[in-house]
Amino acid sequence: MEQVLNIYELPYNPKRPVVCFDERPCQLISNILKPLAMEPGKVQREDYHYKRNGTCCVLMAVEPLLGNRIAKVTKQKTKKDYALFMRKLERKYSKAEKIIIVQDNLNTHNPSSFYEVFEPEEAFRLSQRFEMVYTPKKASWLNMAEIELSALSKQCLDRRIGDIKTLASEVVPWAKRRNHQKVKIVWSFSKNKARKKFERHYELIQKLS
Image (cartoon, rainbow, N blue to C red; front, side):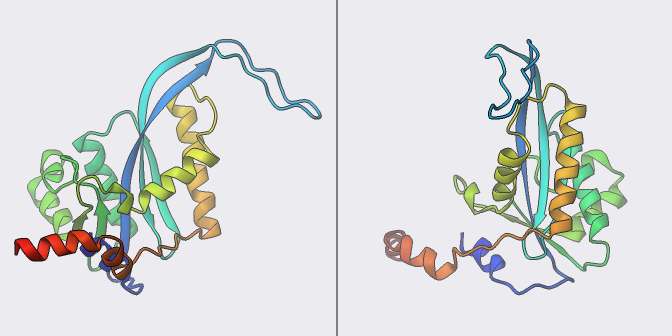
């Protein structure tokens, strides 16, 4: 926890940008009956019946200090999807010496994914471009990408979308608008606040050591 919080307290450094990454599963749901359009004084009305068309996944990377993000919609969240997304992210930060990536400890979120998708030379090159930092188990709330995905859910995914193409046509422009507006994330939970809040756990660690 302190490792992640310490990274969040670092000043902005274009040579070592801090980027948070996370994934969000999405259900593809379409209407069976056509909704009734909005009228003056009335919201759009839709029937409670719907059709479930499977699921997909939104991959999200956000740089909190500058308000930059990349979003991509994929059918699944496989090692290949992760590796291709990371290569896209690496190209966006081509001038950086090292990209500090904060993410949860999923089995796909490591350099082994690069080696399953790319040739060894490219996989090694990519693995050297990232400094991978993992949130503790059951503490994914420390990942600021979850805040960005929450905003996406409220502002973009708050209605029925029945196919992956339509979902992508909504998500990607949404991310571009946020980038144009340079919407940043202000993180206030510091190491000192964490030590105060979890003081009893620090005492236990001291006793065990």
